Amino acid sequence: MSSPMDLSASYPPELSPEQKQHLVSTVKDWCIHHGLAVRPPPAFVQGAADPQGVLATNAPVTLFPSLFPRSCYESAVSVQKTYNELYASISGNIDWLGEIIEDLVDVDDFVAGLWKVHLAVKSEGYVQPLSLGLFRSDYMVHKPQSSLEEAQLKQVEFNTIAASFGGLSCLVSALHTSLLSSPTGEPIVYPSHPALKGNLPPVNTAVPALAGGLAAAHKAYGPSKSTPNALPLCILFVVQAGERNLFDQMELATCLTQSHNIPVFRITSPEILELTSIPESNPSRPIIYTPPYSPSTQFEATTIYLRALYGPQDYPDEASWKARTHLERSAAIKCPTVLSQLSGCKKVQQILATEVGGPEMDYLTRFLPNTEPTKIKQIRATFAPQYDLSVGGRGRELALNPETAANHVLKPQREGGGNNVYRDSIPAFLQSLPEKDWKGWILMELIQPPPAKNVALRSDGQVLSGDVVGELGMYGAALWKENGELLHNEQGGWLMRTKAKDSDEGGVAAGFSSLDSILLF
Figure (spheres, rainbow, N blue to C red):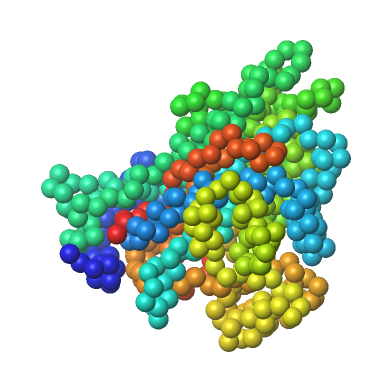
């Protein structure tokens, strides 16, 4: 049997020109046939060439599934429900979370804006005690080349809002499964390789799990709160205008309508105040949606699923903040609430990862009081070293020294690609900022993945091959009360994103990565 080193060193097998042509053609056709697609990027198809917005192209995908250590995958699966519980508990502890956020509001306008929304609704009084989280915990395999230790799973970040690609990730694993399947037991579209024979990606349940979380919230909402006449109930997806990744979102919507019989409507964030209303005479504050194409029909939204409003670019004016407050004060169950979104700040992640003395400072035990010590240990093992930039602290020393900065990444309080500062750029970047603003950033030691190669088919038809690194996302769905008590807690499905080794950022939507699947070894 081949060793893991032998497998990865010779993987993926080299394609002949004929094999490459056939494989690329097959993947393109499969993607469009099954909806593994995105709207074309502007650099590929300009708006003038598609004024009606009718075109779609394959999502960026790898031609081969990537090899991934079974032990690391199983670790990610086993801790996800505990991670769900942890972040539900944090978002419910307003005093602790508030201390962290209030320390950031004078250096981060976006965090300050979200906190202001919470304070405005708190002063009026929240009417919905339930919160929904559709989470994704992102990891990389850590395997320093100079180390003899086994590969370790290390967390890149924990996403509490708009954790995307659950829909398309299921399709990518189905794509690779179809390419690997053969009556003879050996795939015929790929060259022969030990890793490919009789091996398929693990089952990916992201769509039913994420849709199941939304359906659980819909059910928990209960009957219509509208008076004097009850209204039909629905779920609202709030999305960005011009969303290229709509087919990913539609996988969840289709599952909700077909498997759970729940009406789903999509509105863009600029349409919130135009198409929804809250009857001020009703103390329950139900949020009412009126379809613009059927103004005589109204629906009451049980659940608001945000695939927008997660970054500063989504708040171009005061009306955007008014819209977010409008949603937050309503009776609908939010996915996420402002508090849950704020719990995903990198500062929270850094504090959880910091080893501090005394049981009163053991935050994992504090927020997971009924969790087995082995699970606490598993979660702690996923943390990479992280530091704040306080005066005289270890983080400041590491960040300002060019030699040590070269092994770190500087992160703001954001989710998604394109926000971080890497390696040699860190010292000069910090020195360009007022020192008082440094506390808005955290320093994280870079994860060192093992060497790997793959071939990617981009959305513009380019085929690129070379050295790559992969990032595994593990999905979770949780519904909880304001005291953190869980009503629904599920681990479900995964996402693999692969990018060129020399690309620091990892977002698919931002154009850095390709969707991938995994073969366990």
